[in-house]
Length: 93
Image (cartoon, rainbow, N blue to C red; front, side, top):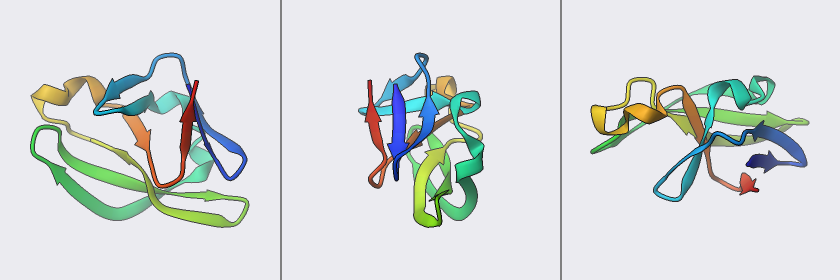
């Protein structure tokens, strides 16, 4: 699977985990040069507190386009160390 935005490969892995139709990529498969920490946090009742990254590619910004669970609840423990994408990031095989 690949995560693409603004003509760049943001992440690529054959070891994604699919939860609620979202592909979670192992953190080591993500090109961190495109990620900037965001102050945004949300709560999922069964996964826990999510943190976000802003994407920046070739001067273009995509706020809060990636998210992860630093300390997921037990029900979602398998996605610790994984990052998912949305907001126009195309995830394809």
